[in-house]
Length: 231
Image 1: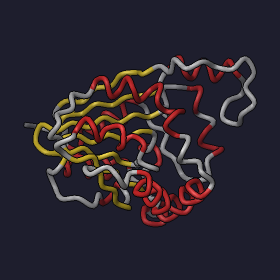
Image 2: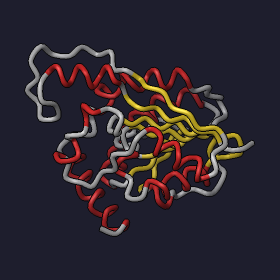
Image 3: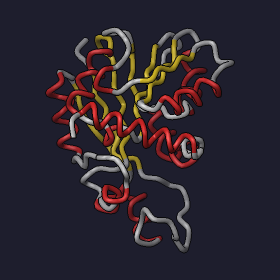
């Protein structure tokens, strides 16, 4: 499937998610791994920040007070998600949203100090092109922070690919790092962010085989990629 067709397919699927209210519960489910990431980022009040795959904008709204003299921007392939984000953020003066795919980020080159992305990267139609676009919109010495739960080094999530209705990329930490280096990033590293939230004694969802697999998945942790552009 060509990249443009994949993007259209993603838009249709995530529009359905938005209409079903599935974007609104992302904050609570992702906070256990997002809060440790935010604690690692040195926000300056004047920073301009971009969240790629922002959904309903919950992370943008959390970042906005940290860049009170700057800008917190979000983009998503789903126009329904973006519409929801705009409605929920209407009273925040330093927040803006745009609809678009990561393969053609709708901002000029070099305008962001930092780019963040949570649980979006494995959906990108062309991960290499997405990383190149992130490099393009970052200013010299800018940093990317990409958080991913679905990656090859955590065997307890591999079953997700067959359950999702959209194409995904199951890459290893080493493969992700390689894409960032090829795009021109100077410093690239990664770490694991375990999920400390409690696991139910009995799991009845569809993403894991049982509670033990869910617990093991959380212990392995999310993959956090950090990359810095040349100064």
